[in-house]
Amino acid sequence: MTPFETAAFCANLADTKKAKDTLLLDTEPITSLADYFVITSVESRTQMRALAEEMLKAAKHAGIRPLGTEIDHGGRWTVLDFGDVIVHLFHHEDRQYYQLERFWNHATEIPRESWLYEYEQRQAS
Image 1 (spheres, rainbow, N blue to C red):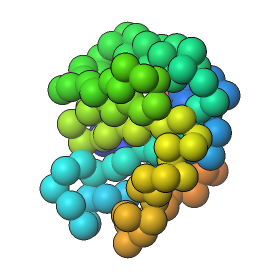
Image 2: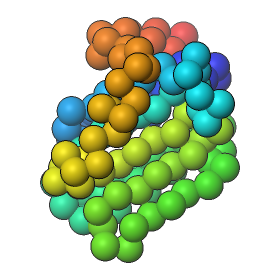
Image 3: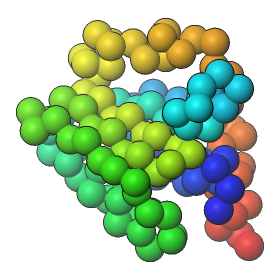
């Protein structure tokens, strides 16, 4: 998968698992950390754990291997590093506090329709 396909895959999975306010940011022109960031919010520790586990499981099934994971054992945030794509899962209050999208406001937000379309096209082929 290309980095964009991987990012669309992760964003779509977060969206289908009832995460809130999922954003996909193109960070490739502004940082060497990753080409894309996926940022999303959850409502509870249980949802955080379930989404992280499901994302890792689905990624493994799709042949995407994580380079690393960081999990706050308080259930407030999780970071999944897929190399060119970094997924940030936040409890909604912590997302408001850290405001990653404001910190990376010079990154280009990929419209939801674009990453949904990419995912649907990949599923159809």
